[in-house]
Image (cartoon, rainbow, N blue to C red; front, side, top):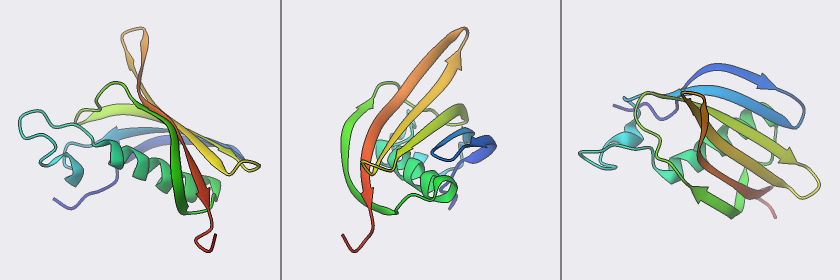
Length: 122
């Protein structure tokens, strides 16, 4: 098992925002050992994916400079279909992200936060 990224089912990319529908495939390496009898997607993986897809789709700076206002509310389980919403603020150099899913008629917020980005020379 060496897979690290989810399956992207579809995406909608604008100049400063992106919405990706992804599947957190059960065979992703990060599910192993986090927890043995109840695997869930680690928070650090969620942050990594948000940064990865922001760099890929929004051309944001790739150097992580810190986190703000991070909340992990509901676990992301293996094979979950989730929506990752990314919003880049060029002026403040902050990336806002949110992971959500649909349960019946309800929107479930799994996690959200903001990260400060910059160039690696800063």
